[in-house]
Length: 274
Image (cartoon, rainbow, N blue to C red; front, side):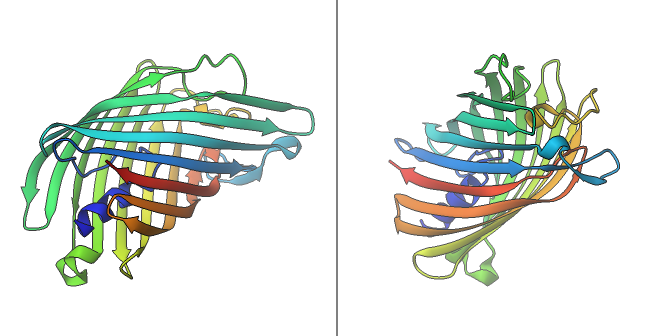
């Protein structure tokens, strides 16, 4: 049970990213993970990764409130998964101040257990639909405003030498296609470790590549730059109140970028198992 909970928390710390849980639910189980992420940027890198400040003392920030859920459809074999975000975003500079608050890209899909790999690892896959729930009629824009789909493959497990119940790691590859928009690739790796009975530390790294036909960075609408590269790291600490409830908090920062804003921020999330 401990390694299962650690696995849930490990993936859910990346709320700002894809927010899906690699561990399938048992029959009758429902998992919820409400989260808050704060993002801030006032600098960017161009196509050659040369850093510069936003023009006119500009900055962009947002708060993203999400509810992730997962529930079993077929035992431990197939889950229904979903992610519902609400975005509060602000862009400001010496001449402009724009605010926009609305729902973002809702994700709804299926996650399947594919194969057990060795003694302590599991291979899983998911297919998710992306449904824009906003109009993009006010800046800053929330997203591309396009429907899409995402395919992911994930291998997750434990290291025996670190204590099977006290650690968890995973490696995931995903491809997201917006219809009429960019194609995005993600490589994600994470490691978690339980250093006391109640406290855990979680760390991850994301490599995120987006390919589109527009090469201009928009500082007013950083969410819809279609062609960019990001390498980001996250560190979170958490406390497990019970096997059914845990609270986590942490920070993230971009390590390297191309043709996109340079971001940093913090996140708070819970894991609730019913």
